[in-house]
Image (cartoon, rainbow, N blue to C red; front, side):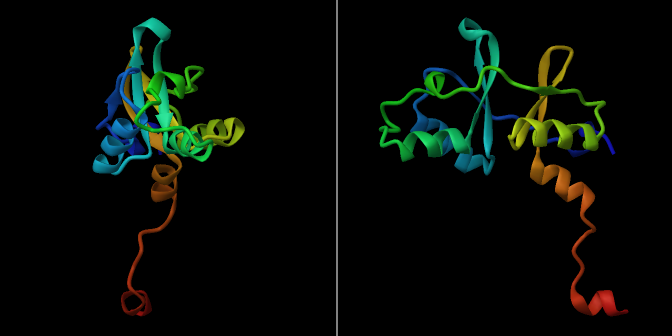
Length: 133
């Protein structure tokens, strides 16, 4: 199975001037664990994850005063839609992160997460009664 088969194509994007609270609210509303940060002044495409927000709050920083640009990962590992899920899992394991921005022709095409990979690899859940038949 390929990354294009597992990735989410609905991408939440935020700007570097958003506060962490604004980004968290958008991520929560969309039920996503990461947002693509578009910042042409800082190299283009970055990523903000729930872990970045958690680390900031854990340090006692005010999410209403902290801006996304200060917490964005800019050294992003990008996946290709044609990667296998094994390649994506290997990249995430090697890098110690749970999300990959998927680029197609240098443009964000989606995000693939560990959860997406697991969903594709795990057998569909069946109720116990159906499994016994």
